[in-house]
Image (cartoon, rainbow, N blue to C red; front, side, top):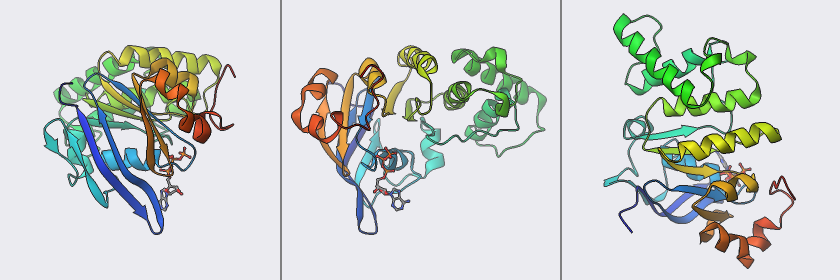
Length: 255
Ligand code: ATP
């Protein structure tokens, strides 16, 4: 296999006595959609936060391409091509959809949030923001305040915000959370399209979505990787079935 885009080795994060990620090792290949699943409290969000740099690891290492980013601060990881879409919405509710995307692109370009600036730069930002909105099918809602968007549209907007930074690696933390059946189907379709353009790490409880989308799946339980492999292998893995897939908390839309 070619060198992976992301290589995580023996990553550990402790919160007092809790070992939230316990020597996690995984690779994500260029172009892959790699899902991370596991019961509540397994350490999935902690792992994503370690990848983005919001949390620093106690030990272990993270490589993005040929760079060791283990101690690189979050803002630089973003500049290196990491983008995260949050489990809890991070949108500015009183701002329009396009302003949210433009502000994220502006912040990524190394400027603090500013509303008035160089007109040409502003036009360029808005052009990029509109393209990102088009990418997720929200161009027709560009001028609508976020507070008036549906929950499903807000989740799509979060994706547009992440895409506006032109990431090499997109980290998605439960993009299907709270979506109804038709909104979830739309999100799966959107992710099917985006996966052709960007490498994705997907944390998700919706098993229909995970098995429809993933090239590979890593299963975390109590911070540890208990299995990693192709969806068909994970589905049949006895340890995984016992620890998670047989679990009521795993959302399956078709039972
Ligand atoms: P869920 O599926 O419910 O989102 P998760 O797999 O994302 O869960 P984490 O949120 O990463 O799990 O939590 C892993 C463990 O670390 C849990 O026991 C949690 O209580 C603990 N934990 C997470 N963040 C903190 C924190 N900031 N301080 C203390 N403990 C934390």
